Image 1 (cartoon, rainbow, N blue to C red):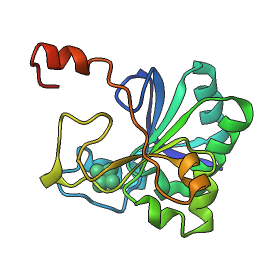
Image 2: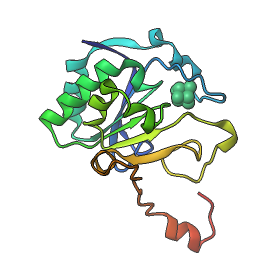
Image 3: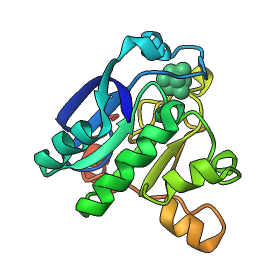
Length: 177
Ligand code: SF4
């Protein structure tokens, strides 16, 4: 199975906690106003790679993993397979960004299958009017960090609370993040 990849960045700190390897995939149908990377909407913007090859590369880094885009859900079959290989062969945490909302995804068997192997979902379209620079790992305030496994277990949305180690210092010195 193939996956259209724009780039794979190792040791990034902006797509979730700690050092992560992020796979930026091509293809997105949300077309949000103010999107930071409109080129990524086109599936042909990426390079076709074998899912097993991407998994091998990601596992070799020893880092946790983030699926970003574009929208990874645009290539749901490939990302479902990738997530399942990563979880089968490691205990890496997987974060996934998507323009869809969690409530939409749990309605469909296909996306539910992917969610079974996702730790944190950053959901919702980017809304320019709600753009914020002071919230961790998100572009606009409507987007949520969802603890997927706890949410599936409880049958209600449980948000993931990131630890901002800098915030006490920022408050002390009155610096805006
Ligand atoms: S979901 Fe993300 S990649 Fe897609 S249009 Fe919105 S901001 Fe851009």
